[in-house]
Length: 196
Image (cartoon, rainbow, N blue to C red; front, top):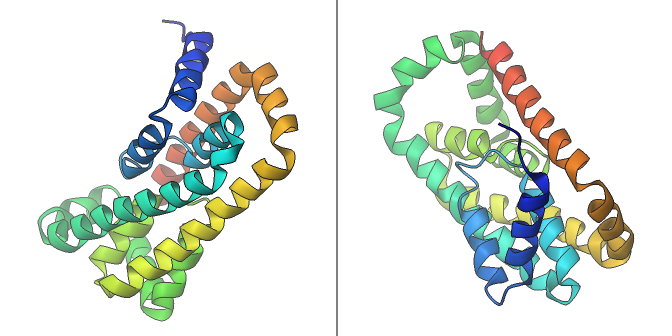
């Protein structure tokens, strides 16, 4: 079945132009733990439609993303004993898991900051922080600061070059949609290959 990118684009425009746009934004970023779409692009999309709300959108994105990260942390912290024996042999090798554990023990919260600032999956960062029992307060602090800095850079770029970016997105939405889908598929394939 073909995907109607024009309809998706119009639906997205309606959300960003509605009075409830900040609530839509918050909902999307609260669901970061389970979504597989690059949320920086969602932030770009919202900022392009209402540039006067860029600061508000950056703050909403940072706060909601941190709350989503808290959910991942708690899942990793409390459910690891239950699901860990399934994950390590089946989804990730014991060697890769041990390497990841050493990385967290050596760098702890700076690893959270770097992972949250760089375009890495939030699921991996937050779940692993919970699994390795990092301090909750410092985890949230480093996570929030990294996300705020990352999203502020996106917002600042949209403030400076928003009109050019908007014109490009309007012209090439279909291609960008498929490119993002391909990136997601490649990301899943990469992590699957590492786990084997």
